[in-house]
Structures are given as structure tokens and as C-alpha cells.
Picture (tube, rainbow, N blue to C red):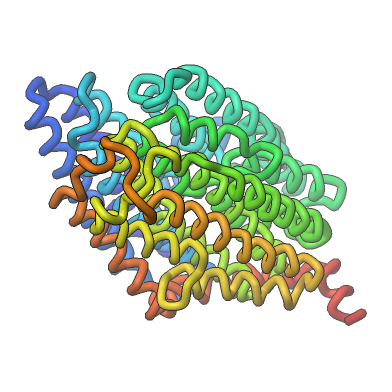
Length: 510
């Protein structure tokens, strides 16, 4: 690990949190909004500085590491660092949060300071999830995401059942946190046992240390399944996905954009579940692949039946997570790079689609297809952006969705030819539900009086969607700008799994 000479990672965690405190203390709403925008912009600049400082050639080494004793009696540390898998999530998370702030600029009419303070707090905590290298610290950040999301859904939701949706989300996440905590404790105790130490003095929660600690075969499967269960709830994977459509319908669209754009559960599977229990991950990769395939096709079929844009986008998000999981289960270079690329893609494509749905909801009070016919005639600018994002979602060449989906489908064909059929079916269904809804909602005659009077994108909204569109096209035409950042880390990640006896024996048989 390479240590940081300046605590830049702590800065990007603390900056939004300090902004949240400052915004909540400002009585003037206009000034509070401007301060929120300032801190969000500074956070984006700081995360881009981290990307600039990152050396993509160092492979499995964590960089810019900061280590401080936190709870010495349990060997719990404040330990943060970045590698090729996590580094690009930092600016993408900061950018999506900035977009969510701008999108909600005029839509929040009560408790405005608290709303923007919670968005900033959630940003800092989410950055902490990506950076934490101590399992106890990671679990702290993981659980701290719950209070801001609970209040954002419950207080500013747009549905009549928003409080029930907030409770449902929280209960699902608390359920998922239980197996995560058990897995973390098992790993810490195993380290003390493996090194001949005593409990709790010689337990370890540091991820680099735990990666070097042998995990007995009788614990590998248990730890892997516990971690997979905990992360599957957040991802979400079927059958734990029902909270996302509920939140999409009841919660504020800017909050839903963050939940659909930032897939912390899938990131957790890549970061923790696979490398910490590598033998079990290899042995049960077929289970992971089947789970991803079921989620992919099942959610796509449900999305095909939807008449509400927000609910459709929620199920589409779940379906695309299924494809990511299928790629991870392939255990090859195309799979891991495609999975990381697609997760980054979510922040712009899925997040922008949900923000676009929010603009429609704010103007018309509905995103039901029956209320939207002919939008292209009265909102041509919004329609152009929506159509670009929809095409990126289905993987059209020239957009960022194409290289990500291509890598994932190729990886599945190489590793699990039977499961690749589900990936191809999912791609077809994705085009079917996106294009079908687009035809119903945006084209045809204008039949609603409210649609005839609707206003197109305002300059502020146009600017934020332009940024997203440029990134989608940029990553689509120059995918190597993303792939080269995580290539060395992905190779090291894959090497750790390839060295497992299960995969080695399989390769000999082949």
C-alpha cells in the first residue's frame, strides 16, 4: 500500500459532511442553496484530483492510504484507500449528487435546508463506502447511509405512501446488514485463530490483512453466502428487489436517481465477497450466475408490462444489475471489467433517466404513459436527451452502454454458454420495454391539455443533462479511458480467484 502525504481521501469524505452542517445553519434558503452547490462543486473537483493522483499501473496496491488508530482494543482502524476498482466511482458519485442537487433546485418547497444538507451528508457517507479498507469502518459507513435516505424518502417523497416506502427501505437494509455483520465478525475472529492470538486483542478488520489471512474451507462458503446475502439486498437482486420499485413510485426522483445510479451492493460483491472467500466464490460462481440470470430476465419481463416510467426504470435498473452479476460470475477479465464499466455507466445512464422522469413528474404530476402522449412535440429538448439515455440503456453502439454490455455478454459466452442465452434475451427485452414505452409516451398525438401547456427543459436542467450526455458519448467512443484505469487492479483481482484449487482443477479438465 502507498500512503498519502496529504489526507486527500479524508478531505473528500469530510467536505460534504462539513457542507451539510453549514447548509443546515443558514437561515436564508437562497444562500443555503448556493452554499450546497458550492460544496458539491468543490467535492467534484476534489474527487477529480484523486483520479489525477491515482497511478493505474500499480495493480493490486491500494493508494493514497490513510491509517489511524480508532478502537485499539479491537484493532479497528480508520483505514481508507483507493484502487482501480473504486477510483472512478468517486467523481461519478460526486457528479450524480451535483446533478441531483440541481434537479431538485426548485422542486423542494419545505424544509429546504434540511433536504440539501441530507443530500450532502449522503454524498460524504457514500464516498466513505467506496474508500473504507477497514471492515468495521465500512460497515459504519454502510449503515450510516440509512438515516439520510429514510428522511429524504419520508419527508420529500411524491407518493401518498412515502412514509411506508421509507420504512420498507430501512427494514430491507437492516435485514441485509445482519449477515454482513456476522461475516465481518467471523473474518476478524478467524484472523485471531489463524495467527494463534487471543480474542478480541488479536482480531483484525483491515481488508489488506484479511486478504492475506487463510480462511478455512469450512468457513469459506459461510462467509461468501453471508456477504452475498447482505449485498444482494442492496444491489438489489431478486427476490430482494421489491423495495426499489416502491421507492421509485413514492420517493423523490432525485433520491431514486441516486439509488438507481449508485449500486453499492454490486460494488460490495466485487470488493469484498469475491476476494475474501475466493475458493467459495469460485465453487459457487454458477449459483451467482444463475441468480444474476434470473434477476436479469425476470425484471425485464416485469418492466415490459409497466405503464409508469418511474416504475419501468426501477425494474430496468434491477435487470441491468442482474447482467452485472452474471459478468462477475464469469470469472474472466471481460466480466470484471465489464461489470465495473456497467456500474459506472449506471451513474450517468440510469441516474439521468430517473432525473428526466423527475422533470416530467414535476411538470405534469404523473409519469403514466396514458398522461404523456405526444411529449416530443412540446418538449423536443427533453425528448432528445431521454432518447439518448434510453439508447445508452439498451447498449446502442456509440454510447457508454455498448462496450459495457458487449464485455459482459462476451464474458458470459466464454464462461457459461447456457447462461449467455439469458443475457442475450435480457438485451432484447431491454430494447423492447424501453422503445415500446418511448413510442407510447413521447410520440403520437397530444391528447392531454396539461401536455400541450408543458414547458421544455430550463437552462439549468439542460446544462446538467448535457454534461451527462457528453460523458455517455465520450465513454462510448473512448471506452479505453475507463478500462485502462482498472485493468491492472482487475488482473490482480482475477489472479486471486484463478489461483484457487477449484478453478485450477476445472482448467485442467477443460
